[in-house]
Length: 325
Image 1: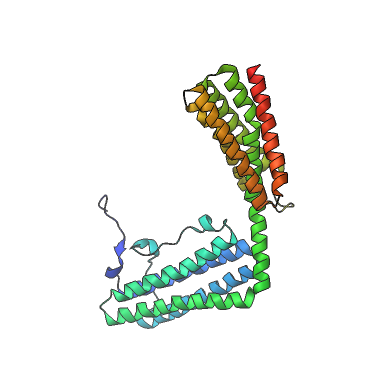
Image 2: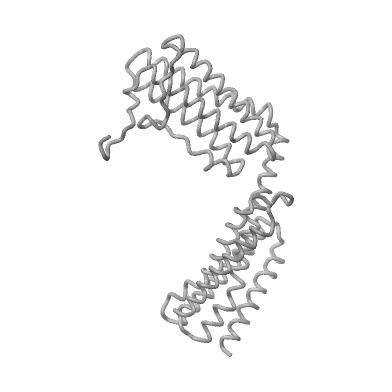
């Protein structure tokens, strides 16, 4: 192979047999992806899993029809050609990038799969001059369009209004337990717990670089500690809070960001400019926490304000008094 030159073949250079083989392998891949989605969703969202089971079965049926067509026209030996062998052919994202995402994201990915396949075959048919090849591509485009209608029929059969509402509610709850709750706890811990050491250092030294280093160390240290604590505290099996790794990442990252928010202003050389900027950032951080609590955790606004703003003010005052003393 010549360096810098793609080894993939152009679609227009494929024979009708190779196009048919490519369609067969694509149907196999899509059926496998749908079954992976079904297994991912089966425990928590059985109705949606049934939809993907049905879509996988339909892909199998299309594959069988394509194989029968290939056998009648070209024989039983199917060329080995896949999406990655063809330049410009639509690519599927790895299942492991999608299957751990939420229910709505998986539904959107499945719809995009069908739309991409249909568009590709339609465009390919429009750019083909050979009548037999054009007919073949048109048939494939029609088959992909039929997949979308099938998905709608399966949703009506397995995913009624009550089932969809219940699954959407469960998906939202899982998102809150796995990402929002640990992230909120981390943001609160990082924003509040680092106030005292950062502002104590600031007022004690009035050295912005030293204050920044203390804030950086406190933020990263708190993030690592919070992340590992979340991972070790609950494996999520009995509590239903989801993957401990995801929760640990959410808690650790948000803890670090919460502390860095009012540490970064001390990169400003002037002490009072940096300190005033940091105080403004703290004000924004605390009100952001109040908003998240009210928006996602249904905490009454006044109670969230009292808990967060008053607590943050007390910690800030403690740090400032200790540093000034």
